[in-house]
Amino acid sequence: MSVSEQITRLQGLRNNLRTKLAAMGIAELTANLDDCVAAVEGIADNGAVSQKLTASQNSYTVPAGYHNGGGTVSIDTEERVLTANGEYTPTTGKVISKVTVSVNNAPNLQEKSITPTKSAQSVLPDEGYDGLSSVTVGAIQESYADVANVSASSADVLANKIFVDSTGAETAGTMVNNGAVSASIDGLTVMSYTIPEGYHSGLGTVSLSGDIETALAAI
Image (cartoon, one colour):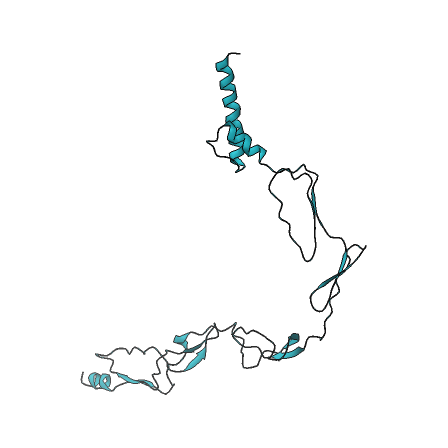
């Protein structure tokens, strides 16, 4: 192999090395061979690093550098008892099996009863209580009518009269109150009478005048 070929080979090896080191963040992409060698020599040899996690030290930062794959990070297997002041007391030689919580005072719980409403409501304990032990919801009041079968609309109800529609909302009627409507037809020029839309009391009348009899008598 010629000198030129050897130089090309070494340059290729340098390029591969510095690309790898740059990806690891310990060399620049423009580093020369000396810089690459210095970067490799600067990698710390951590060997097999081992660490145990405990209640007081629940995380571990793995140091930068080379690790031979034999290191471990494990959980402390001692049994620990949680005391009232929030501290963990280890019991040597036992695998963790329980956590004992000491409570000085039992929680003050409240029994509560509520009445259903049309709106959603949050049920919370009153001041001085730690929580709720039970909640009793009363029966639906008789005033809350079942509107599932309501079919009337505003046009079916007298104007200014209030009714509950099929959605349960209070709604005003729009039907005109005509009361007792009276009208007369003569059979000559007025042949019919159009009954107005709306409510009628049942006392209205439509009568035939005597004009037709007068006209017939004059023949």
